[in-house]
Amino acid sequence: MEIKKVVIVGRGALGILFGYHFTEKMGKSAVSFIASDDRIKKYNQEVSLCNGKVCDFSYISEDLKGEPADLVIFAVKSTRLEEALETAKNQIGDNTTIISVLNGISSEKIISDRYGKERIIHCVAQGMDAVKLGNDLSYSKMGELIVGIQSEDKQKRERLDSLCDFFEKVQLPYTREKDIIHRMWSKFMLNVGVNQVVMVNEGTYKTIQSPGEPRYMMIGAMREVVKLSEYEGANVTEKELQDYLSIVDSLDPENMPSMRQDGIEKRKSEVELFSGTVINLSKEHSVESPVNELLYKKIKEIESTY
Image (cartoon, rainbow, N blue to C red; front, side, top):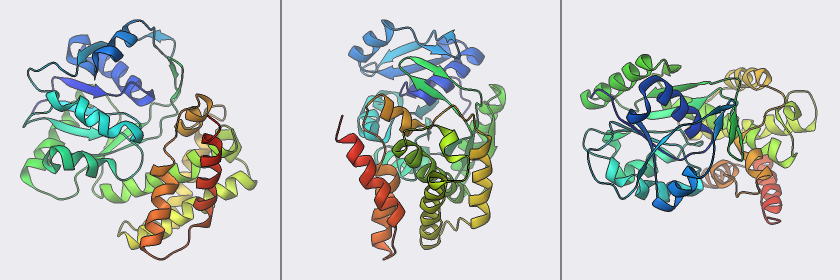
């Protein structure tokens, strides 16, 4: 299962970040973005930058049939995942490994319903401070991919081994995680707090790095996820919440999370993925989530003006 051909679905911040890195390490012929013909035409008419360097990417049509990719990476917004599943269909074969760098805790289930859970390696993208405004991507921290499998079996372990070997080869920072579901919930907790609070305050990471109402609101939203994780068997703890606050405090104060970038560009955000998920799970488990309910309301009000 050696990975020699990589296809990326989605040319947002993380798509460009990983696409640029892989292209630099593997060469243009080994890494491609897949999209509709109309979207490819648009991409070819634009100049995209990654930390000031021009991105010379390869594109393939979603209609092209041929040898499937060894690795397919879904790097779209959750609002476009169903469309992306259709876009990628001609690149997914029996030996294709799939990872998702989407936020939240649901994309792997959605992808596996379409393409089978045997192809999925669970993944968390963490620690990057990438900001994409227009066609210009900048970042000071590349972060890492945290990967793992939910249950041990020979085929899944071989896929995970192959993926980690690939990351070693292309010098991509990564961690092989034993309890990947726990880690995904921990990252979900972080996103629920950081993304939403920075968006409603129209700020940057600086907004939540000092004591004050925004930081307290962020912590309150995160604690509601900690509570839900107990019911869902993921068991995120207060200690981990504090550890993630340390990560928040290490980020560039002038940068911002993806949700705030959506707000600046007047794009619909992933609010359903964050507070929407928290509210639905809270109803299932008969617990309260007042902070996330307030954030959901405020974000919907902002989006209604677009």
